Length: 552
Image (tube, rainbow, N blue to C red; front, side, top):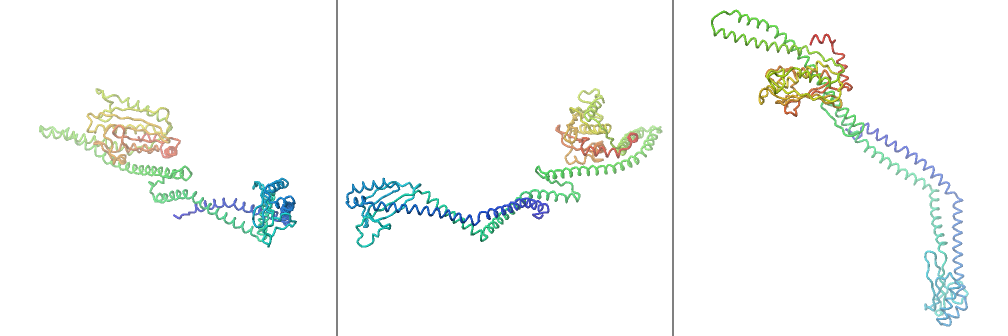
């Protein structure tokens, strides 16, 4: 099977379309928004205003730096500081440096040193790096020049220099740097906008997003649809042998979705078709066997009466005195009479089987019917002189028959007369098995009848504690002329199955919990498809009641 069948492709395509529709709509909307924002943000007026703001900040910083330089020039030109430094007295220099620090709060550090590098005096305070930025300015002590001293010039080694480190608010410088970075980024974006790079970037991002969505949608579609299509494929593969007539196929799909439910319905359909085919085949074979039984009964019945009358006439007319011959004649008469009786009984069973009518189903209560059957079998009377069991219609067999009746009504469509015949035949069959069991003496045994309600059917079980039915014969035991009894004709259980099939049910032979055989009879509820089909079929096929009773 191909990896992607028609159903798989359709489901994956549906998932793909479902994912692409909102994505494409979002891309189109975002493109329009980006274009609108871009056109608004990159107007020439915005750029000029931003550059003006940057110039204002730059001028402010420039003015601040120039002010600090002028302040350093004023400090260097002060006469008291020059005299104190020229005196070379450390105390005077420190005192003057302290005065200058008080007079100029912006000072961070103030040093007086010679161009040669020797330090004359110094004063400093801590710097708050988070709030201040410093500027170092060098001036000749007592000079009026705004330029830094040329200490490398010849003869300047002993000249005094003022090194002033002044602090300014850090915020102004940081704001200027931030604004410069922003202006640079804005100009790059504006240049990219003019060159069409934003459009290309948007297209590339949209292409990547679209490709990723396609891959994810296809992957999600495969993950979602693959388990479904695999099970559909399993179901499809199962239909091929079914089309060829093999109804034993089962798909056995697990899960709680519709496909699993379809698989279970398919299995149930095959099971019902198998049962229906088995019923039709059984009824066809029964019809053929009935025709055979009818011909056999006719062929056997005709010569029986002349044979019996001829032997009786020979026996009656002999008046001789030969005791040996007379004994032979008597023995022959008894054997012929016994065998003719056996043949007549066999002919009767053949005739009964050949004339077996169809069941006429009518609404009834199965629980009430079983209660009546318990009374009926109990009313057959005890085995006089025997206290160990109830009398059976099978000579030589005594059984303890027990009915376990269900509680509550069991509405069903049954033919009470035919179903009574079913119970009679099954119980008689159990009694014959108990009688023929070599491990028992006197044919004593137990037979139990009980019924229970299941979801769609009623189950009637007849258990015995006899020798049971061999496993290899449990399927064939309901076929005509198949029997394990020494005096059986093999028609009793066939008649039983024919009647149960007419009810739309089934019958099986199993092992009994009592140790013997169990005959399990299933009758569908009237509100189930099997029950309705049986009622409709019997209503169409059954002859009038008077005709049926006359055949019975």
